[in-house]
Image 1 (cartoon, rainbow, N blue to C red):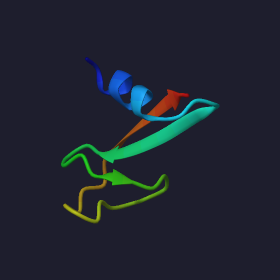
Image 2 (tube, helix red, strand yellow):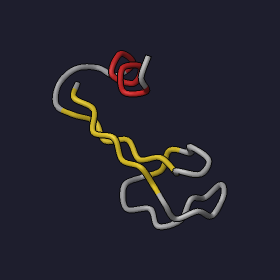
Image 3 (cartoon, rainbow, N blue to C red):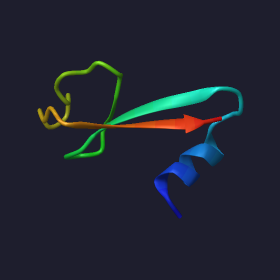
Image 4 (tube, rainbow, N blue to C red):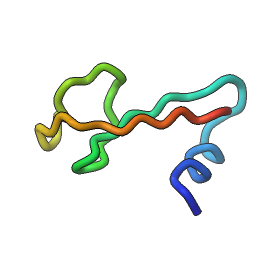
Length: 51
């Protein structure tokens, strides 16, 4: 099962949800974050999940 499928099932419907995670440690961060607060990495992945 994909990450997208799992997250889609957990979120309520209506619109879309943006999830941004650190590529190094997987910590969820706010869009626009420049440095991960947990590991200091600056590469992020962005998922847009339809609700």
